[in-house]
Amino acid sequence: MHNEKRVVITGCGVATPLGIGIDALWEGLINRACGIKPIAAYDASGFKSTLGAEVPDYKMGDYVPKNYRKSTKVMARDIELAVVSAYHAVKHANLITKCLIARDEATGEPSVDSTRFGANIGAGLICADLQELSGALQTSGDHATGDFDLQKWGEDGMTHLTPLWLLKFLPNMLGCHVTIVHDAQAPSNTITCGEASSHLAVGEAYRTIARGSADVCICGGAESKMNPMSVMRQELAGRLVEGRDADPATACKPFDTSANGMVAGEGGGLLILEELEFAKKRGARILAEVTGFGAATSISSWHEPESDGAGMTLAIGNALKDAGLKPESVDLITTFSTGINAYDDAEAASLKTVFGEREGVPAIALKGVLGNSGAGAGAIDLAATVMALHHNTLPPSANTASPSTGGLLRFAQDEPVDVKVTTAVSYAYALSGSQNAAIVIRKFEG
Image 1 (cartoon, helix red, strand yellow):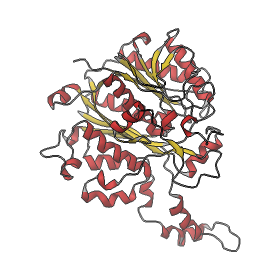
Image 2 (cartoon, one colour):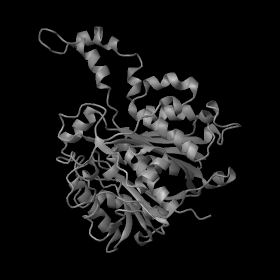
Image 3 (tube, rainbow, N blue to C red):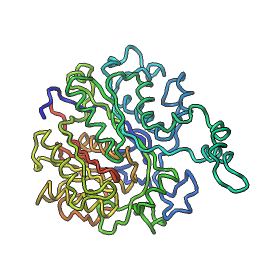
Image 4 (cartoon, rainbow, N blue to C red):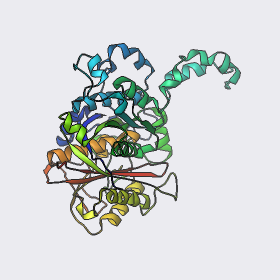
């Protein structure tokens, strides 16, 4: 596909277990920090693994205008992560928005016409607050039998929930709050395709700008799997790492031959994409350029990977074709490897199909220190990819000493490695739902 307009990345905002903001993420990766620890948000002793990857504490009042602080009361954790990431994204891009002006952090007019400012944000299945919900449910049971009584729920139980309760848990509320806070009125969308959501959202934003429907888009995703229901889903699906609670830093082993599962996590990442000439006109710092996007669906199963990674192969191939590149042009691969054997094996098979007999391609794997944050994971991967290109540096990838990909990928181990890279591929796939997506990013050349 030929895109008339070029699309560049000018800002990255993240909220990860390594800290808030792109600098905290990058410095954490370079210094081999680990965000995987025993879960602190709730008592996880009943689970097979008590490990998780939680975002450090923050105050929502630091990320919204003063007159919007009441609205933070109807933000679930996932929404908060998106709003925090959005704030850091516009700050990193030196983009003046309605939010920064209202917070007295910028003066003058917004950098972009609100009707030309779009948003595409990936979201997961937001879990209800169990304490809040259980309090209401307690009043809806037959105390003699312990059975749930639907009539009591309607007459009394529901009254114990705030009238706006549902608005905390709708996936589109991530984009809703971000667009209101920053006054983004151009085309927007919410993508709910599991771990593939961020890449699909960035791809749609890329297309929106390329066809001339917006000058700027804020895009990516956020999700928190740090709640009992989310962790239980992953445990029942047999995806969580087991028997490694004693050493959190080595528990998750992406692509490693001794891997036995993933660690559930949380996080968000939003990128600022701009039309090239618009970015130049406002004097923006250009970090990288998006040159290709591809997507595909696996058809064999909605909850298990294809052994040959066919859907992933097609998505990466589509992205490279869109960018007008051959596989041999790629000199950095940001893998999605989660540490779940079947998925890592399928991913490895896909990479071998796409890249053939190549050896030693610089690669990044982040789940060993960040866990799997679902819809937010892909955008964090993309942000790290942008920084790797920008700094010509390959950050260490934890616990990949014996990669199951053979000699194809070269991970930095103990120290960051200086690399000269110009073209990167980042991709993601949904653990449930069969969606696959890939983005090609190149170092910007005017």
